[in-house]
Image (cartoon, rainbow, N blue to C red; front, side, top):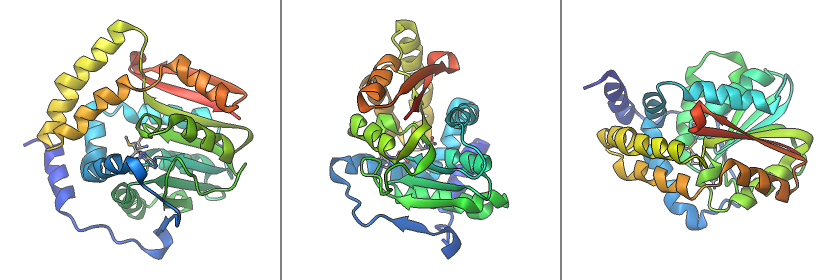
Length: 265
Ligand SMILES: C[S@@+](CC[C@H](N)C(=O)[O-])C[C@H]1O[C@@H](n2cnc3c(N)ncnc32)[C@H](O)[C@@H]1O
């Protein structure tokens, strides 16, 4: 058994984290699941092993891509920021380091189990600025914030997973202040056949077998179809302009396997 597998088994068997009032998770009253219920259940199931699998499958590279995504937002000290589809909180923690104790970070996700992991990581860390993060259970398609509120927004591996991508982009546009940026990191649906072939080979030959080792084969088989059904970089830029953003630039990263859309309201 590998070290990671041992860690995962420990994670699966540990007691659910206690949530202190200081690090409470707020539930959005009008939150509805509708047809995304299956995806919500999927992300709840993978929550205990999600972080470890990310490290194994990307050889730790996802940390670099996430730092790049946060830098592209231009978030600075004192800003109010939002991480949509925050999962276990990687991007929210990085935003927190950018905005400092004077700033604010909201991490929003519809998976309560992912938010429990995020909250537990926050409690276990001694980094002072992490106190500025609040976790919120809510829907990316119905953001519970007023218009023109945030100075910077991130969304990591979330847009590909929402049922209505146009609505998700409209919601980002609505809650972002004019002139501010959102940075959207995800798998790249490449237009280069060779890149797509490499990506599919990696999913079939590495991702699914490793996930199978963790008992999550079905959950990770969904990855390939979700990339096939996703938008190319050009299409993402077009969607952003159609929604009303004044600027949209798509950057290919990790040799074209990943992509990051940067939009300016
Ligand atoms: C692949 S994970 C990414 C987590 C994290 N951003 C990261 O990069 O590690 C996708 C997350 O999106 C969340 N999600 C998917 N659809 C959502 C929706 N409509 N509203 C809120 N969260 C959603 C899932 O619960 C899951 O935690």
